[in-house]
Every structure is written in C-alpha cells, then in structure tokens.
Length: 305
Image 1 (cartoon, helix red, strand yellow):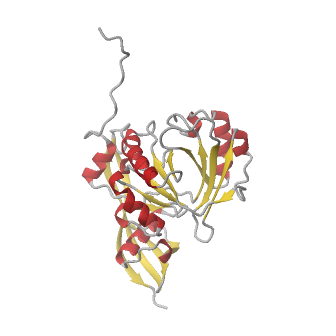
Image 2 (tube, one colour; image 1 turned 90 degrees about the vertical axis):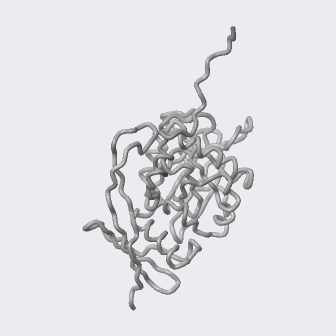
C-alpha cells in the first residue's frame, strides 16, 4: 500500500470558474481599472494570503504601517514577486510608479528590511530612474483561483521575452478578466491576455500602442473616462497612448456621463452610457447573485472652437 501523503487536486479551468463565466456572458472590460494613479511595488517572495502583503512574510504590522502611509498620500501598495523561484540571498526590490500625464516615472531600489521601505519618501523617492516598461501580471491565487490559473502562464511567457521586467503581483481587481496585465509606467491595464500572444503584446506595449481588444482601462482615471479613451483610440484609429488625454469628466446623470478629450486635432466629446448589469459568480469564491456597472461609449463629436 502506498504511503505517499494525499495531495489536493491541482486547480484547473472548469465551467464554474469566474473568468470563463464572464467570457461566456460577454462581460465588458472597459472602465474597470482601479482609481490609484501612483503605486508602490514591494517585492515579497513566497506565499501571499488573501490580503496580499498584509498576509505574507513581510509582517502584518510593517505592512499595515506601510499601507496606511501610502494610502494617506494616494499611493496604492502592490506586493510583487519574481515568476518562478527567487534566487537565494537576492536583495528584494521596491519601485515607485507615477502613471499621470506629465509626471510619468518609474524609480527602483533595493531593500533588506521592511523598515527601509517604511522610510521611503513617497513624494520624492530615491532610487534609480528606470525608463523601460515593467509588466505586472496578477497571480494572486488566494484572492481568486483564476488569477493563478491564467496569470502564471502569461507571466512565464512574458518572462521568456523580457527576463527581469516581469513580476507577479497581488490583486488588481477584476479577477474574472484574468489574465490581467498592468503595463507600467503607462498605467494601461489589460485583461484576458493569452500566453501565446506574448510576443505581439510586448511589441505593442513597448511601441506605446494601445491594444484596444484587451484594454480594461488606464489606472487613475474615472471609469467613464477610461471607456471614452478606449473608444476614441479605436474610433479615430489613434493607436499611440500619447495621442489622447482626458480634459474633464461630467458626473453620471440619467444613465450617461460626458467625457472631454484632447487629441491631435482639437478637443472631443464622448458620451458614455452607464448601466447596472445583474450577474452571478463575479468571483470564484462568491457564486451569489450580484451586479456590476458597465460603461458603453455611444458617440463622439468634435468640439467646435
């Protein structure tokens, strides 16, 4: 008789997974990027619990203090780790990222003790300026199984192309859109990325091209503005991220929001419909009935001078 210990079955893609349910329903992705425009990335190898850095070997007290400091300055903390095994004795890394127009930047440094990260000045961090794109792939299995099932193969495929430029990251929202990839410092968040398309994905990202078919939005912007930008890029065949910027967004009224953009030929107004959609199983851990807001661009027009 075998004396091997019993192992739980390896998670696999099934019809009850939230990512597949969302695809079959046709859940729209536009407008689903999170609202923080500035990020602090903190390397923490090993397992993460549901709460990311706060449920890791970083230490809950240090993580609580760091997140409180960052949140007070409008900075979102993301735990990161290298795909595969971390080399023994390798120093951990931090990165401070600003995705806002006019102040886009990425600075990186190393640390040995969490106290060093706690002492970082988040308004003017030291470190080395990094001008190459970073790829953050959500692979937070304790938050949602789909993130690991779909995220880890994408992280591996991207790493094969850009070693040292890819990190697995903790929860970025929108588990049902896995695999989710955040490109920094552009701030473009993509969903449903596939490993076999990694070469084309990297080529587009590094040329500054917006990949409309996979775009969830740009972090730091209101949801309606994210949807309007994506619509204008596609409708006007303006493929580069720098071709358009958001001027203003009006509050939602009567089921729609207005977004003013600035492009190479002047200002544009985009009308975005906002509707509540009933759905069940928005995450693998919650199969109950729920709902989400869908952002659907309706029309675009030029603002007359």
